[in-house]
Image (cartoon, rainbow over all chains, first blue to last red; front, side, top):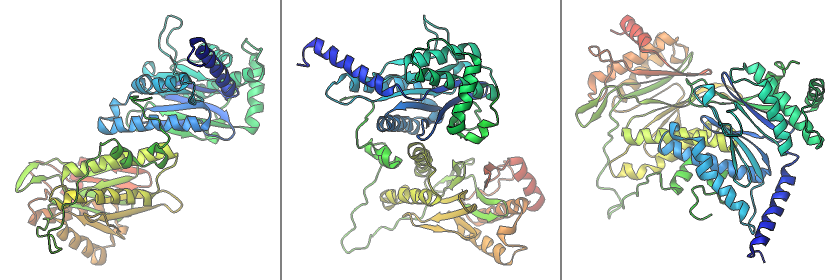
Length: 259
Length: 274
């Protein structure tokens, strides 16, 4: 029955609906390019969501832990063999995602008899200058969104990942007004936390399609941080070290938070 | 997903965090077959120890000092006088090599990627014991080449164990991959007998034991030892007074690895050696 074209389209549509529902509660992740690097930040309780991929590349992901692990391992494997056989400078996020990851995810998604990847991933590669930072978001169906200039939008120095489209759009709308590429670390931490709060608020009440009041955001942020920990990591721009990834602890970030 | 450039299968090697296994599965790591033993049991051709260089390492008050001369030879020809035989593997690990450079550098590269790969896939740092063992496995896998008379490598591995009880750790190996932890010092290469004598003497009857030396004193002893080795061993460069080429010295401490600037080595050399 699935051989009939419309059945296939229907199967794909069902599958899309199912995956979207599975991903919907995923806690948002914000990635902000600032003066000295790229900051990944989310607020969560248990599972790690931000990972090192290679010297200059990191990823944040939501979805099923098993699928995230498989994709993460595959990308690390590719980056490591490339870095070993050629050089670390030849490992490029653009190539990893466009040539390797995206086709695999699309293939898995469209083969309706096999399992799709229940994962949405946000990759970032730190550049020599803030204008060279690259952000790529890969969807479960292999679709790629970048921070580069398109017809629809100018270049962005940030990227977000969230459970629903609306939540992500609100986060982007907020960061467009609040974040600049020459921001300090402290400013980036606060913008990222606010963006997370806005994204997470939107997941709680699906009818909100406007940016919430500033006071409401601050109140929500404060409430959430009482019982949840901040998970964050940096890709440092400092070229004197090969490995740029550094995890940040909850305690070193809390002292930087201000209203 | 046939022909896809990324193999996302269930048995991905990432689960074990074993980078050499990954390279082998992709055919990126050369391996040699050990030639069959001749009839009678004993190999008729004994391999010549060709690790023509001098590498030394010892613990001092500031961590571990690792020093190597800069000469690379092929037979009795000097091919390069600025060879780098003291290699940084990660923030806290140094591998210093005596032996065939091609194999040694490849090993260092595999090792460097192994440690990173393990940390990235397993989300934890490889233990010091794990790192020491990883080098041992590479040496053992390389033994086929050693038996064929090519590719012998006899390294020293120095690292700083930052876990529960921070301390400098120093290991030396034989060509088959046996690892030995050195309490105070280690030396390898063709010039090592002389160096070992000096370090033994200094440690027992010198002004103070090696572990109590300051950085300047440690540099001075390393330079004197390498100069002594170069006196009788043509494969060791020692200090090239004319060309102003000094040995490469790295110090591994709690803060990480520092490469001593040539100016500092030159100053100590002028003051206490020359």
